[in-house]
Image (tube, rainbow, N blue to C red; front, side):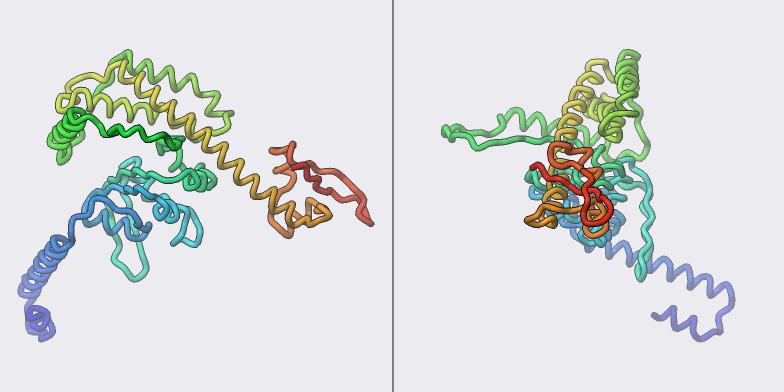
Length: 342
């Protein structure tokens, strides 16, 4: 405040003004540092919006988006705070560790040189169905980058046995993670893990064998990511095997094949979820059509489109066992009428 009052007096020469301006910048920088230190450490977040995540990242540098009951996270992804529009831009940047610039009206702009996040969500099947039914998340690239696992768990008889992970496994896991963090976490420069010739050939063959499926398959965005995900998984396996020595050892063919097997498993899980989600969406559309047709079950294609926003022809092409379109006279010229068979 004293420096600002001296500015107001107006009797400072250019040198004095520059000195005081530099001093102000120094003070404001120290205040920012103190404000950051006052904020408690936050590495795991659950109910974070697309507006709050950039602020957290700007403060801490990296976070894990983690939830054991991921309803809030998925609601946010589906656009709870964004007028119902799916919002995954920041997560997509995190998948590639890209920079992000966030401009908000009435707030300071935020620039993040490298978005670093990880995400682990555990939820009920209906939440996954909602995610995989969202067209934007399917085609926009987020869902193909998620490793889905459907546990298909069922209640089992309690036999009184302790179902804990063996202590030596937990201890080995913890020691391995600590060594990896100590070795690589705070390094500023990137480290390159080279692949062996056999591993490179394995990845190349796997990608080329899927080209036709990528071009004409039922889920090209997902198929195109299978080998990319396999490389990420293979690198994790490589690091788990060699720990701090990982950069000095070539990634083996065995790690490449294991990565591809894991990636293929998650890919098949995603395809099944896509099918289930599409079935749920189509069922909802069919039920809306039938309800609006009323007891007479009489509804034209144009009524379905104009009054209810549903393309009955497209649905009939996908689900011919459920409904079909026929031409009937309805008092005037013939109209395309929906017949319900479900």
